[in-house]
Length: 320
Image (tube, rainbow, N blue to C red; front, side):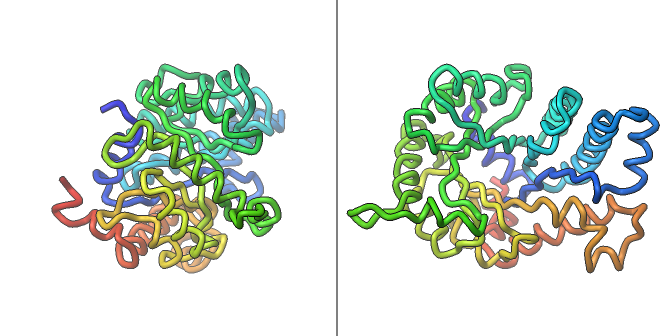
């Protein structure tokens, strides 16, 4: 099994859920025990201490969620902010997730022209073979702002290595409309133009119903999500905005085919720091933060199963 879509669909079917756990370590919200452990290992250097804490925190979340979900999404920015120590920590976190059998989407939002885009792709996209790239990710988020031609180097490396890319199409942030909703004289928005291009790229290499070129579409715009699923039938979707950003399971229901495939739904803060928020803060002591992570993850999985077509993944058909 080499093609990204086949590997992704296999992972979703195996775990019977499209739930994706984002890894967004924020130092001021980390458990005190994790910070204390990092201080012992890294000493007084602040960047080294934070990198050690981010690595331990992320790896322990991976250990909790790897039996439950098909994929994780480390946010590269939190690690890169710390310089070389952070980059090494990110590499170790990604490899730990790959060793745990998870699909890893590195959220780095890269985008550039020609050989520079190819270098980004070769650095991050390992695809089917974790040894093929320094950061060993299965997939990478990509910014198309420089033009559609800048996506081709990422597509080429993805197809070569059995990797995937997720192109920013309609993002979940409140200010997205400032650029993405700009309309041309023909009445089409910028995000609609990008969506059409993404579907075209995905359609050139389809396996198990989908291409290796995916799209990021925010859960906070459910009407546009339904529209874009129709426009991009062969595109796997990566959907942020569930949970802490305000969207619910009903808002993402249009992302799925009837068999529950077609999308990964991300929750980061709501899972990572569940122990700080009700109802989990009322159920678990701070030292039991991993139990809160597990409980929040299971609740997310149950929410999708009850309110979306992802519930069909739990039927015998979903197991096939």
